[in-house]
Image (cartoon, rainbow, N blue to C red):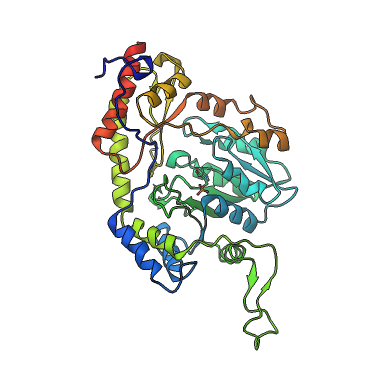
Length: 395
Ligand SMILES: Cc1ncc(COP(=O)(O)O)c(C=O)c1O
């Protein structure tokens, strides 16, 4: 099978059906939990959301968890609660999903990109330091693929310049750094519960923080910025007033019921992701021109992606690699087209290709292979065979 001709060059595909790069895993118990929630008094935000928030706060070891409708809206809320606004600069990575930067742009602040450290694929603290100006108010590092950013060094830059840190931990739920859960670091961290993420609620997100004031602001902004108990109206129970522009970012009890049930399998999900990763690492160790994802010394991440780098030595470029995998019915993806390549960030903020060479060089080589807890060993082996036969063809 390994020596067969790749499907891209007229061979028979390794798989008959497509293996997606990511997938949810939903058990019968989880379906039942959502069914039960439908019988409850609340099908919008109610006691099950509170329970889900309390459980996430407990797992992460923080005082507050505020659920939202997605990682994107959680980032919006975090940027608003941090007070990011017009004239403020917020430093973030270009090698991320657009929503990371939208913690700034949704709040009319300016996203300022700084280059990455290619070893981690996360914000380079020295590059961040160079981008700090008198207008810099915040920092949004992203834990790429679940691998933690250089947390100590980034916190030190934030300390030196009094910056509010919003960790985009959308990829990293369930991991630890120096035995401390990822997400527990100040000031706020964001999780996503999109179906391909480490646990899912369909769509959903969460902001976690130890800061009481931030948590209060997050809760208000999430639900219309409504004061349900304004002074002077104690005898008028209907008197509820909006005190600013808030949003309806309420997660529902239906989603929270799924999230709570998924938490029961968090350890099992992590174990399976670790096993898949180990199997890939072993299989790719001897393939020329493939760099496997970085292994941190100081963390036990829950990996969201298995993103390899395909270099020239492999024998074909990344574009051909992606097309070859698709021809084998192996679903791969590229995370991410750097944000300074996107028309929105170019037209609005004047970014151009060439400004962040480390991010660009990594981007040119990146390919995310299928990676999720539903994969069995034969799925992993199919991916390995697809890569090996392409390698053999080109060597
Ligand atoms: C790094 C990162 N940040 C934010 C988000 C947004 O999360 P959501 O899809 O839950 O809005 C994503 C989603 O893919 C992401 O990968």
